[in-house]
Image (cartoon, rainbow, N blue to C red; front, side, top):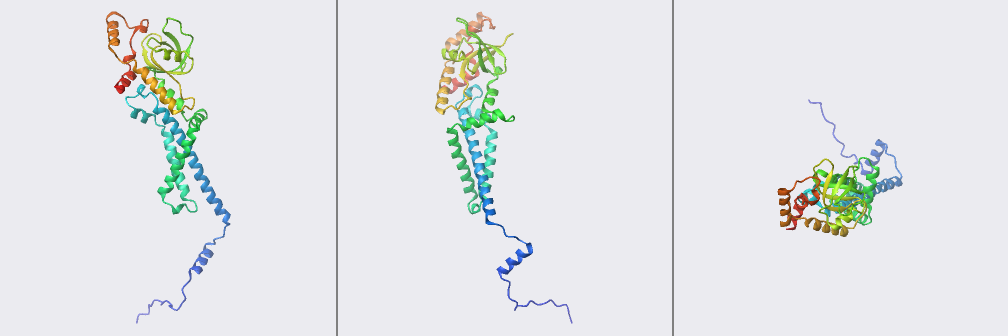
Length: 315
């Protein structure tokens, strides 16, 4: 006879209630009650973190609007064949990454609030992004984008402000771009003037093909950008074709940037290669030597890359 018998359950034993099981668990795990104010503080801190991340996202949006607006109205033909490649290269990647990270943190923080888990992640994320963009547009109108960018550039060693990046783009004499200020006074009847770039190099600027507006701007002694061509010779000589104001040091409305770009493009388009220019260059090649001494009479601007790109775009 098999004596290995399993004990039978006592069906008559009353089942344990949920209440008893809960209290039993509390007793076993030694759970201690906490004040409701602690949970209120935790919930408030989560909301505070969300507010901070959204605010920082708004500042990132303001800087993105500031830099993107300036890039949109810049003379991209001086650097690239089309606007798309120029804009992709000039994108402020740091601020884009910062905005994405902040929005992820804001969405996770909002989901961690008392009732945040009830909402869809897409709704939570979308509301955080929408709030940051709305506040960022408002902050951009007030000039916070330029202020944040300039402040970080002045006090954060690893951060390159818009002005610093613009200098890196335009301070390329071998590619026909200069930044700096005039040194000395222009002399009547002489189309040459001394110019100091941002690195301290002194140049002789040939103004033979500059319009009157460009000459006035160049002689205003403010920092300017110059498009042209670096000439070969014993001393640094730069043949100027267009002079443009330095516009990154202050918040400038989009309509003013648009007007400046339109006028600048029209002045550069005036150098387009026409029949007279081709004849002048043929005569110089046949009867004259192209040296630093006779560069004021040369027609150079029609052949620089920026003028060719602008002419192609205008046709």
